[in-house]
Length: 400
Image (cartoon, rainbow, N blue to C red):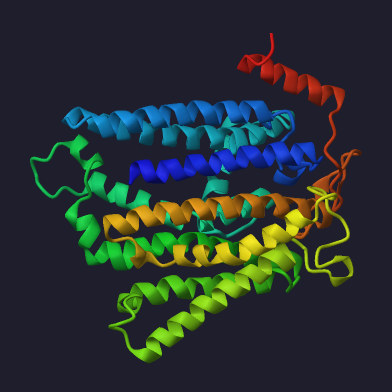
């Protein structure tokens, strides 16, 4: 489970590196949209370098773990899990703490106040009580594609705490699942469904917070209703696991479950195309007036729409907690989650493009004169920005 969960997160990170490279090439102003100062936003080569280094460490540990049958092999999952935790801490520092601290120095705010406000921001994110930036919504959308990864991490946490035998060494918990963690009622019907519903709850609550802040019923109230509908798939399948065996469940219950499954898939697909991507304008061939990513190749947008239609089914499957029991299902879950990561990657490309053009979340962004407005300027390579990127690349060893 450790290698599967961390491997999928690493695959997701590679997708983000690709997104950043394409966004910058197409002049999409991601530092402004994500609310991260341009001087602190990592360069594209440095992102790919970090991804490559992490991948090498991951693959070496996985190969050593597979080839070594001794008890010492259990140290390799520990290394991977520790590296995963370090990557999360580093990302939190670069994305959350460092920008906040940089601003705090300008207004002479104390270090303690910065830490307190950052901790409060983490609490707000975990509970979903506010969507403070577009990046918060974007990151949470990725979490909704990571429900199986979160379930794996919940099992890992359970294995680290629960022991089947009192004399079992600590390192052995990284190799095999505890019987309690796999078969217990508490894990299968409480912990795992709650963990898998958590990202859906975050998006529901964030949309309600934006509804309160802006007073706009659309898209925020409608989007909250979409995630409320998605909750029903997880809750329904968790409370009635027999429905996943179509030979044993009642005809009416199975019909209701399939209906909810199909409606959820269709609604989320339609929302992707019409709202998140802003496509569907019949005056422009079913797309929209402005296309930044591939204006000369609109067929790529049509391909993305078709792919999203089929792959949204996999996203809905991710919401069903009972689909991970046997080893065969574990392998198939890794494949479907990887495909969902691919879908989320090209979804994110067009989603941020639409945000750049139309500011769909109704945020105010900084302008050149220090004021705030709803317009997002194009990303451009100013002399200062070029020097900052050259300095970052020099530190990474790309230039002499």
